[in-house]
Figure 1 (spheres, one colour):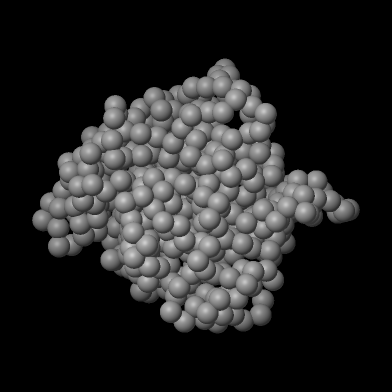
Figure 2 (cartoon, one colour; figure 1 turned 90 degrees about the vertical axis):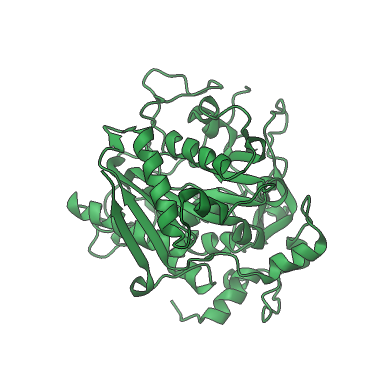
Length: 458
C-alpha cells in the first residue's frame, strides 16, 4: 500500500435555545450562521440530502423521511451485562462474550423468548447489515512497522477497540437469525486504521468489509475517499455527494481553500446511503480529549462522514499562545451528523463495548495520560442518547476512583478542574453533544427516565 499522510494529532486527542429552534438550526445549519432555513413542521428534509438507494423506491425514501428512527423501539432502555470472566489482563474470552450478547439481546427485547428471537426482531432475511467498528485506540505491538498493510497490534490484546470477539459473535448471531454472511459488511472510516487494527485478519469467510476512505488527511474533502496522485485502493466506498450536512465552520486557509464550498460540508459514506439497509454500531467505552466522551453518538457522526477534523481544528493561526490554537465544535457537529435521515433510520442497534475501556487520555495512546481498565461489561440499546449518558457516568465514576475530575470539568478553561494541565488541548470538552442530541429527538437524556438494567453473569 502506498504510504499515506500521517494524521496531525493535538495532545488528545449561552443563550437559551428551545427544542424547536435547535431542531431547525441543526437541520438547516443556521445554529452556526450558515445554510438555508427549511420548514420542519412535518420533519421533512432538503431534497438534496436524500438519494435513492438500491432496492428502494422513491416512495420508500419518503417513508424514510417521515419515520422517527432513533431512539428506536426501546427509548431510554439500556441493558448492561457484566461478566467477571470476560476479560483477563486485556484479553477477551469468547465464551463469556457469547453469553453476554445472548443475555443482553434477550433482555433488551422483553417479548423475545430466545436470543435468536431478539435478533429477528431487528433483522430479517434479505437485509444488508453493516457493522460499524472502532479501531481508534488500538495499542500497536512493540516493534511493529505501523506503515505496513497488515495488523500492527497484538491480536490477543489489541487495546480499547471494538473487540474481535464481539464482532464475531454479532456475525454469528445474525447468521443464526437468518442473515446471509455475504449480506454482512463490517466497516470503518479509514482503511489504514481498519487494517492495522487487525479486523481483516479475524473476519469469517464470506463477510465483506469496506472503508469510507484511505486514511486521514488534513482537508478530508475528496468524495471518492482516495488520495490524488496515488494508486487507488480497493475496499474504498467513498462518500455520497448528494447526502451531506452543511455547517458554517471549517479549517483555516492553510488547509481549506476559501474558494472551495466543500469545506462547509460533511458527506455521508456510501456504505450508509447505498450499501447497507441496517447498521449495528459497536462503539467503545472511552473518554475523549475534545468531545468529552466518544461513545455511540460520536461513532456515528465522526465515523460515517468526511470533513470531521473541522469539528476540532487544532492549528488556528494568529494566536499568541500555543494552547489557544484549538477550537471545539463537537457539541454541535455530532448531533447534526447523526440526525441525517439515513443514519437515524439505519442505525437500529447499539452495542457499547465496555470490556476494555479508556477513562483518561482518549481516544488513543498517543496521549501522555492514556489509561485503560477492564470494565468487563457490554451495554445494549436502541437509544444512543440514553446509552451515552450511562456510559458518561461509568467513565466519570472510574475517573473519580483514579483521582481525576469528571470529563465535563476538563479542558483548559475548566473551573475547579485541571485546565492548566499541558495535556489539555481544548478550552472545554464537556459532552454537550449528548443532551443536544436529545433535543433533536435522538433519544432520552433525562437520567430519571432512563431504564438502566444491570445484569451480572458468572
